[in-house]
Image 1 (cartoon, one colour):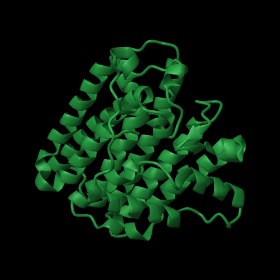
Image 2 (cartoon, rainbow, N blue to C red):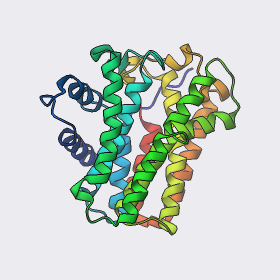
Image 3 (cartoon, rainbow, N blue to C red):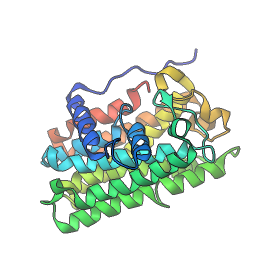
Image 4 (cartoon, one colour):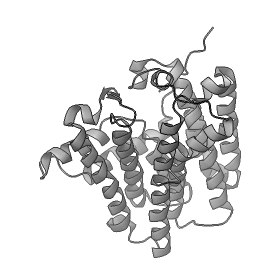
Length: 304
């Protein structure tokens, strides 16, 4: 019998973080009435009103675990979600994955046209870096940490991050990758931004080295893989309605996935192994790591 995808909601202690980032994103994005109106409308369409907000939740969870004030974490939480949204807008384009459904609604280019979707994505990426560079809530963060925050987000976007991962992904269509090649692709495409979310939370709290930094580095790396393996599983197990995007799209395009390479059961086992490693890494944080542990469990228990 084919296993059913798990049904899980974001743990209740994290729901306040989700509400917080939604309000912060609404404020950070340009108003749709501000010229150029159509581009700003597309930016807001791409970012607001959907998604798990996993990356900003990680910013809040990591930063607050280390003593950062929520107000100081807002810019980083917005920045990683805006970067994630920009990447989805571009990934959905006909030249890339050619998707027409995202978060349960038509993709940005289906609503606003390809040219405007490209511009909206470009503008979102720039806005994310502007938030880290100039937001007044980050004035108390040491200049050295601010520079490292900018670099962490840049690495997550670039050739060793999402852009490189998407390049690997495009080149891998129709091929059978080794497990190590598949892991490299996903560490770049998905894992890098998840890791940078944890890093941004820590850097906002002034933690840039030492045992706590090392613990969060390991946590972020392992969580990124657990998250992607679960995504691959849900592409097989969940419905289009639950996913908010086309079910089975990866398989239809001939993309390499964990279930295609090692099967459903072994993929589920591997996702749990990475989750366990992520949770084990939190030991130096003690009770302060509880919310991060809850997020790790949610990563492989979610149904979308």
